[in-house]
Length: 172
Image 1 (tube, rainbow, N blue to C red):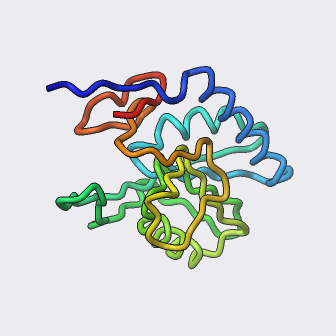
Image 2 (image 1 turned 90 degrees about the vertical axis):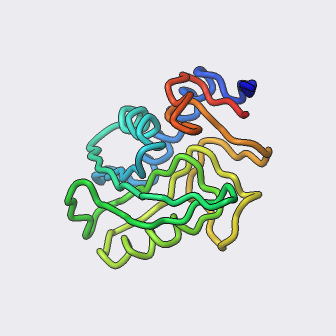
């Protein structure tokens, strides 16, 4: 049986929110260089659009987190790969995550990145699922806060390798 996808955030709403996030990040970073680190693969669309929405100097890189799914919806990180070697010492680093839910992986990554002594390190979520948080962490920036059950798809978010190509975000 095919599950129905309910459109939650339209293309226009996503574009508007990302433009606002870009302006806010630039204001907060001042004239400094901004480095976006996207957690693959869900944050790839988000990173591309956010990078274009931030005026001034912006560079980017990716981190791959290999997850192992248990019998629950919570995934455990089994391996973390920095896909491009980037010196973050003294830089304004923004870690981008598609959905911040439990916060476990994000908390671990932020701790690892802090050891590399960035000038600033901020967590940016496309979707903030604060209702699923198991550790005390909150994104510094989030495009959307959601607390509805179900899975989200579209705009780079996939479920079982499907629906990531939708230009909007929906809930299943």
